[in-house]
Length: 362
Image (cartoon, rainbow, N blue to C red; front, side):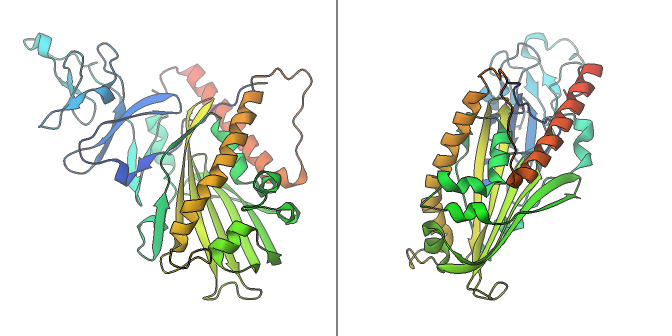
């Protein structure tokens, strides 16, 4: 079976804003590219390729000097925030060669999240990172996970997030039951800020909620509106709205906005973060003394662990020769199949561009 690849020309989450204190170097591998990211003295996010131009030493394992320069920990070459070498200790009597620079990586800090573009910097202006307004809105309580390394291609997670038919049997007894598999699915496609999106929409009335959802959102029988949107190859947004029958859109409505960042490390690994947002004044049924956000965040890792197990088992199967195997797509997989088509086309496009110009994405 051919391995799934990854798209490089995309905005990917490097971390939450809170993960980047002033002048702390952090190393990342995103879409096969090594990147060092930090917040400079002025509070601006800086991202460079994580490799000294001299002897390949990782700059993330180096240090920042009091004047803000990044000093390589091996031979002391110093770089400014744009990646230009400005000092070489061993040849101070000579001009600095013009090729003595490391590539600058496009980076954006927006709505409480730091994004980087590991692909061709000339294409970074063609799209913007998805907006996450709830993260910085005081009307919402936001709780996010620690970054999780998962041994699977990130496309498998994207497909998982848009597919709730796996709620039975994988999540049976917590967020799922076999009734999830019967809910009709609508599909929507479009483009926002240069990002093509695919969204699945599920509407159900007089639905008996699974145990976790009764605990989190109070009502055992609900009308529910549930959307899963791949906003870009790096980000998914899930919106669940629950209310007693006939009460959607009123003050009785409960639910969440659950965001997922899926940042590819390489073909076989990803970093997954979930970002939970609930109305700050909502409380859970399971523990009325806890906010809904805190209650969900205390229980949701059980669900994530089940997904992680399934994703890593899926990835193992990509090492097995096909020998006549052909993947079957079912009716609920319409959105997943569309995403796979978009993904494959984008990967082929980037591979063709690199073949024509090997340094185009450097």
